[in-house]
Image (cartoon, rainbow, N blue to C red):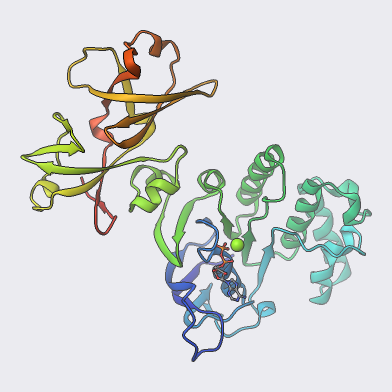
Length: 367
Ligand code: ADP
Ligand code: MG
């Protein structure tokens, strides 16, 4: 087990003197011993590159990687004491499950009785002790995934790296395996970096989440803070489904205006009032909007365009003037009481749950 320090890591592919685009643009992060960190971001933002640089499969263009108290930047992958689990598992097809699990530690010249002990213990933990003599092609996707995990666990590395290990599994298996990974981490406690593009995996697995965008860290925080205090419009719209509503608003005469609609009752934070700027982005999560009866005071009129019923809840797609807005309501019976003439609904928001972003930098402003 070990803490990890990523110190200003940059990476471009190709020769050093070439002007290739930077794929990693100065990654800084300090990961505590035993933490489970999820790196999340859209496809192509540099997640796999970051993991490969940490594993030593790619050299960074600049910057340093420290694992435990050791700078490993110039070390071979085999000298870093890291185990990696990939999306395609990369099991050896001609070997049995047991041989697959033993391969790495045999190479490391571990005594046979210790190899046996670790395999028995790990196989029991992962519930694969009944399939040790099978070949990978005889296994289901979920079993292969567990064998790949087992092969990593028997090495007892200081650091686990996972690159989208669940993306080949169907939805149900993904959920159960996700829970299992979390449980194993509680048992073993090895520092882990887990890459995914799936925000649900990120929210449910992580002690802390790194949200990446275009080779940079947008935010590094707990799942709670990522959701409740997103640092930028990117994080706000990437984490949460449906995404946070982001309205382009202007402030005139101490009032918030969205196109031609004036939000009379929104309290404008002092820092925003004092800034002298008029253009802002107002963020509101769909669950912080409420449909209220016709005629309720301080309610905004919106045009609802579509209602989508999802069992326990429903999503209302609407517009405030030209700007789209999504409302999530839990209570079905609700809607029919309201005047829906001309598809018009009335809306109130939770004043305490508003997010303000600078319209130029797109960064959150303390409210
Ligand atoms: P992610 O895992 O977030 O989807 P990657 O780290 O795989 O992103 O890729 C980030 C960017 O780096 C992409 O634009 C990709 O095309 C580029 N890239 C990845 N690997 C290589 C490589 N070996 N050579 C050149 N470009 C690469
Ligand atoms: Mg990737």
